[in-house]
Image (cartoon, rainbow, N blue to C red; front, side, top):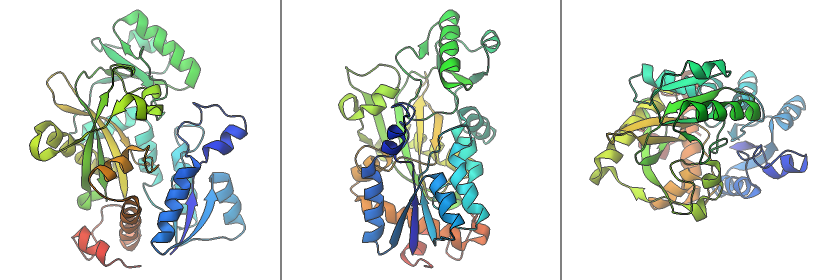
Length: 351
């Protein structure tokens, strides 16, 4: 296949004057090279397209691809992750990972929680603060945690994000509203274990890859998986592989994650973050339908390595699941194709 790569290269945005935190979700050159190299190793020809503006330019020039491997995060707004998929849909060019609707829902943390709760998935109670008047309307018991509504990589989360009283809640919300110019999600604080669950596939054929536990070291910012903890995870965080076969909390976390993935319509690959409540029961926090793919820094590849698989095999599985969707009616995730066994279908892909 001739596969184009769409991505936001962090160094390009930094060179253009954007800040470190502003570009935190964008990819390093090493990630692009790893994906490109894996695709070529699998026998595909590749074309590095770059960001959404480059994609528009290339499409205007008449360039086309059999598949676009899309990891663009976008720069502004709640729909930023949907820009590339929406444009590719117009041109009827297939791509990896979720469609625009899924990406919009999952980037807005309150929308995510609304959808999954309607599907019966457990998630902590929440309140959205769009202005300071909304703080007085919050009836959640303390402690709570406050974070920007539509940011990733722990942006806006630090040691002060765990809030014990209304005055601190107001001060934190004011700071976040001014800094990120978007609503603030206030959630019941979950004090228990934290897990990140990897998933491949879509719909009934989705499967759990495995689970890592997020364990903060003594020097980390405590109680929260913050921006600093994520950016410096190699020094501040341990990620032991935990098994559903001998840990019922892990088994429950994986069940919850799979239900949430299916509820929002995630596809190909992704990662879900969960944390346990006071009773030890896992609650969904976030869904990441565009999970990071740096071979050693990103959680999904780290999980894949922990179960004894190599990076090229992960990229192969992602592309193969995309092929299954392409061959389904209208490419909708989760629709059945001839084979009901995803493994047999992957061994004998259409393309």
